[in-house]
Image 1 (cartoon, rainbow, N blue to C red):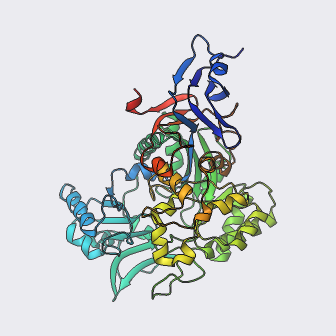
Image 2: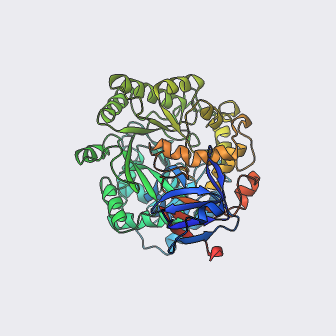
Length: 541
């Protein structure tokens, strides 16, 4: 009889939506051996079996953040925190920049991330002149939470060689008012200024992967999708990931999505090296190809069919022409790649569905699972086409919590409230995953789960209660559906025999807790990845 390497017992172990709960679970090697009652599992105990008494705690499969930016999380840990919680006023943000400048050598870049102009006390973006006043001798970049808009100061523009006469790249914005730069740069134009920022070295990226991954483990997250590998340092990011894995500095399972945008794509190099979708192992896998079609709704750059509220009549930013997008999608599809492209506004989603449909018609594949990342403002007609073509939405439900009120401000209630329709997608059979898009939002999973259960924003606004799901459905979204989105549902996502033993143990039974208790009073106490304990909270020792 096989003897277990590890047995978890005396707990409430949620194995999956269909599987329900068990008292105990046995692990052999790096996989689940069996689950059942305490007595049944303890009968598999051998001389060297490790026993973990859960003491009544609640366990789930390891969570899967199906859309974030792992290297960026690690690198931004040392940036100024510009989120509304840390810097609720413009003055507090400027003061943080001023303090950083006082202890940083002149000429060194100062970077901040996380502001939301709709939540700042002034109700607008910072201005270049305000950054100049607090850091005249340092180039400064303050990036909006979404990552699609940044504010730069004069020193940054000088370093990048940008002035009022600089041509604006297609799909970008360099804002001027009265013929003067305001500091705001959006979408593709950000690359012009960011080119002046020293690229992260391989060693810095390895350390970032390690630091970010360990933080994620503390939340019970054992798997991630890195949503734009190549955006920071090109193909060297592939090298960094592989070296991190070799050195034991890859704490979470990573599914890598390759940046495919024109001019910065790493797809040709990856394809030449044989790195196509599915190549890799349980820890590091080549996933899909990423193209950006538009921006963010809160930043008013997501591409909509109808204008945003306001007097500028803008419908957002279209980054690629139809012909260019369709050629890029067809090329990646033909090379054997799954695609996971960024489209938030309904116009961008329409453009992407059409491109996917044409590629699938030219080279049919019944199970390619092309994804629409975010898919925030999709329509019923688009859903019907997606079902027919086998196209899947991959949303971030925490956007409702963090940005729902901003959506109402820029779009109005009629369009905003029904965004990210999780219940509708589930009923259509899409198996939608969820993620944080971190560092856009914090990777803490509890606001994400709270959003799925309540459809409430951080301020308490209810964003269409019809789209609420149950806690069991929310956990399925965070586990099984995350694995499905990566075509790895036979590898992970459930605690069933043969799947990897990735387990998160929480302080509270989420099946019986209120949404508020999950949001405010729940933490991950223990994380197991592949049968090995990789995180223990101090209170457990």
